[in-house]
Image 1 (cartoon, one colour):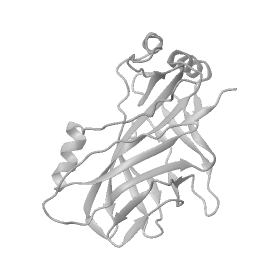
Image 2 (image 1 turned 120 degrees about the horizontal axis):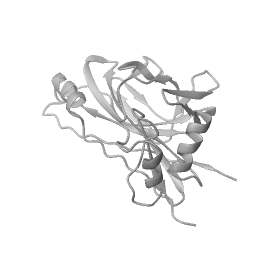
Image 3 (image 1 turned 180 degrees about the vertical axis):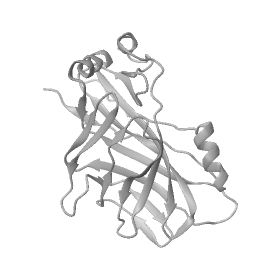
Image 4 (image 1 turned 90 degrees about the vertical axis):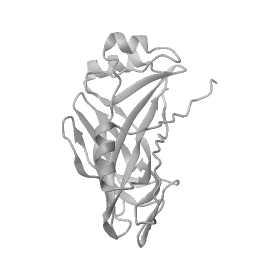
Length: 238
């Protein structure tokens, strides 16, 4: 029987400032609530699951430790995450957490990029350890990588968040969502996708929030790209 293993995706960007300021800083992990996961098609990402009480579809994990002017966010807080459609651009309130008040608004600026290796042949070529990953279709932000008989699926994300206590201070959040589909190679995942039109899996995410020295830095990073280190946990062979 196939089992889906959750992996955490960790991405970090470090900046240094010469003076102390108010920013949202730290780390946040998110987990799906009951029945939760993602359904992926060629153009959409849909999150499922329900948190009770008091609602939402994701909650903060044990490694969550955020702080900002006059507030903190830790584990066990319910929040919401928005469904996405390709070409949607900047998404305000992509992830929100009450924390408990005011709401923390994670604005999504960049999703992906996916792999430049696209399609059936590329995913067949990815069916070995150390081989470059693939994406199922052009424009897909998901990267499929072979991992000892299974497939790691990575989704990178980047955005901004404002300190609720100091609205002029923005931070960058970066990281990703990840899952391992056990006992399926990238080409098998590709075949499942093109046959069924979608793939439904569980997911988990982890993000790091870092300060931005000056307002212009945010724009420079989003235009020119930012160094993102995505660490995937490898499973040992049984």
